[in-house]
Image (cartoon, rainbow, N blue to C red; front, side, top):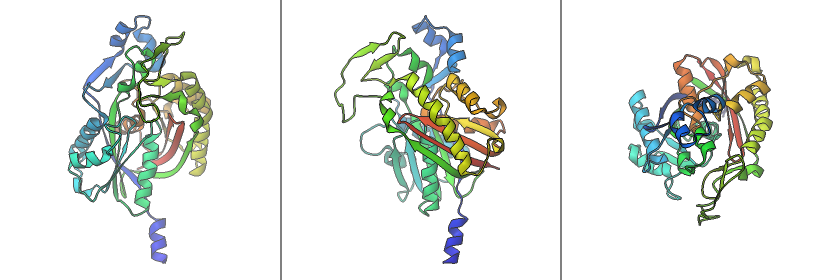
Length: 342
């Protein structure tokens, strides 16, 4: 009994490697301004912080992106496919209501049939939640190597005339291997939910609650789209939610890990947009050199923003000791965790 207790107490979970894939098609600010001449390239870049975003082709899906990202992952890191015990696929744009996209992906990638697979539907907090699920699988002796895949094609939910959201969102997929060994130990989490805000970021029609499209399109006085059939985002309410809950999230995840802000070498938040990130950084009083920005060439890729940022920060040799990750958005849902990087 003592040996079993000792084993559980000393079990650890790590982020081992990350790869990501971007669709070939690029939508630049110059292209957007041609469609919306009331805006300027400089205005979009300065306020949103994005110069370009990658967009899937008409017949390309989140499952396709996930497959391409995973294929690239195996090529880049020389990981044996038979070593994967579990696939976690985070997406809000699945190919089918059923079956599970992760099951199809297992077959496409040629992973062993003893590999578990499931989808979970979360947006901008999805990567952090995925890390918590993967850590639980490892701590529960269910898996040793978990492939966490985040893949999103929000562009398919955007109306062509929705200039606000089209400047923000890009498509991408990222693959993260969580294992019993690696370069970044996953420490303790802070997770939260407030479903009262679900209507402020939503696609109202198309699923089983409202299966029939309404074909109603309207714009408010600021030119923001309000339609049942496309992505609706109440920007002011999302902004207010973020300012209320994210500082509390950071405070709580630090407390759970017995750390202070001064102990954190890098803060990597969900890359929503530059205006929101700057506001949060100032409100939480984070030094600019400790706050990572990674959206200029990617846009807001929803659940993939944090793993893409981690990969880019690793290239810049910025991942040292304690790094705080924070995801937040649609749901409302939020999650934070500390990773300790070697």
